[in-house]
Image 1 (cartoon, rainbow, N blue to C red):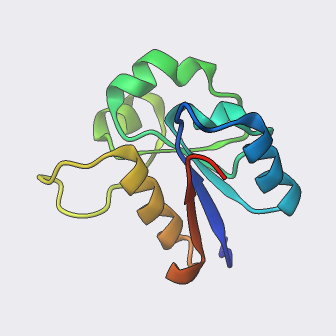
Image 2: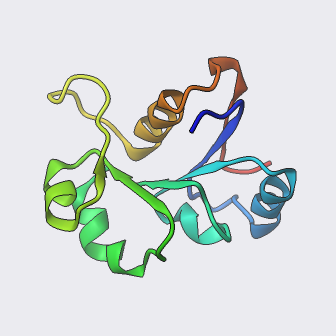
Length: 118
């Protein structure tokens, strides 16, 4: 699926449900990072990069959310979509991987929105 704009939303103390509801009402697709998925009724995708996150929280993720990880171990063990950008020897964080995943969906770089609060 190709989008014109995507919000990448990461969990943070300043992120509120009201902020997330604004994004949902506007109709933007959301790539949620880690536990931010819980702030939305139905994010387009969840990106949690590491196996430890999936071991701890994976069973709580509702059905119907596209699940992505940069961990081959989590991908193989749980059948999660593997999305790894850049050299496999380079450290990453889930937020940076989520933004690169959003870029792979085909939207223009100028239309990315990353938020921790509006």
